[in-house]
Image (cartoon, rainbow over all chains, first blue to last red; front, side):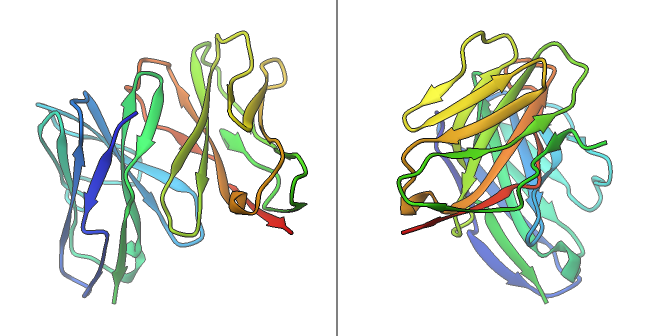
Length: 112
Length: 117
């Protein structure tokens, strides 16, 4: 398995500002994944982050809105830029270990 | 078309009864993986069980088992002897192109399970 931590655990932000979410894993992993869970909804993959290359974004998500960094094999950040109330969600990072996939505790973001 | 379908938005079950949560999937890949997660009200995603498309036996983890019917494209989660602490949202998910974790997951809409005393 993997132990994944995220910072912050929650935040309340004003519209138009940006928030950077950090994800730390206790072991080296090739891929890290970022998901969004809007209120009452399921999880949606935002992007896949591979160390040393640009993140790959899913349809409906763009780099300008959700820039991702992956400076090493244990760490990644997701920035939610120019926030609006529609960005209020739980943001989760995830890693694959063998065939299994584990999630961090999530960052609960509220945009006012 | 939805890739993961969970047809039970909510379920009420008596404590100590067995529970079956339904999940059907749609893929043209030969190699894929199927996952079940539990999400309590705290919001964390707890990994429960994994089944690879080439695994011949159904996966089991403690009280959890996955009833994998490949021809039907079905991957139901069975919880034996349910407990009050099993009350949570349950999500079925799939990873296509089984490549050792190189691809993200597609999730179903979830089933809200409530265990009643």
